Image 1 (cartoon, rainbow, N blue to C red):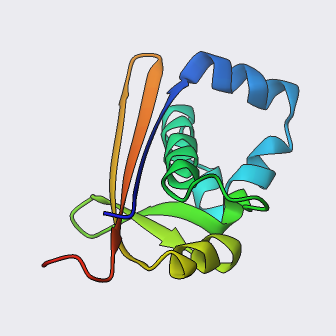
Image 2: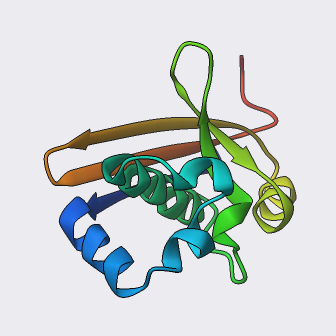
Length: 120
């Protein structure tokens, strides 16, 4: 294991922040994420924060350089590019494990970064 991160987002507080700063959605999320319901956006933001923590909070991280997709079974999959992918490669991260949950006013994201040398 190369890193672990977890983040919790209060959905109503996140909604208030988005209302105060409408362009925040464009800065934080890739186009495919932007149309999701508020709770899903909050959970995906929690995953982005958890990813930053797993990477050691690298300077210059662009929030749109990591995002969550779902696989055919509906499980979350972390996708990376550019600044985030470069830090992950530098740290020898080969696999990511992601968990997302939301219940009521709380959204949670957890990320585990696994190295190239991890046993299968």
